[in-house]
Image (cartoon, rainbow, N blue to C red):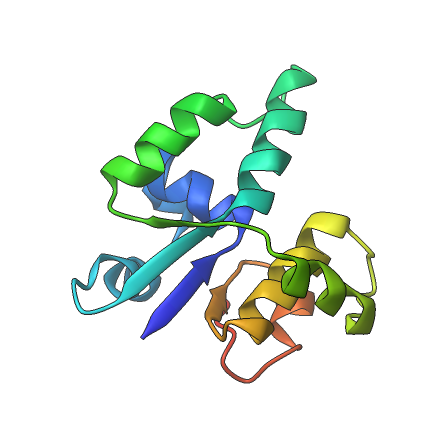
Length: 129
């Protein structure tokens, strides 16, 4: 199986695994599965960490990249095909990062692992808890 982690799930896998149920962690850790983190997540981390808010990601974007690669995740670049696919995604909260992750997951295809139940409604292959 091929999975795309949404930004929160990607961050939690490297900083606070207690936020993720065991069944999801098992999917991510399975060596037969390919796990991806989007460049959109790196971009989101860079913006949110740079704002230095209390709820900012614990690692900056460069350290996150290193941690994701160390965890053996594949970094997924944003292509023009992904960008164009965003046009067909209508999401209730209109978060541009979420829209791009949904578009990437549908386009590739990848099963998106997310904590956001609204995002999970876009495809029966998306996984949430």
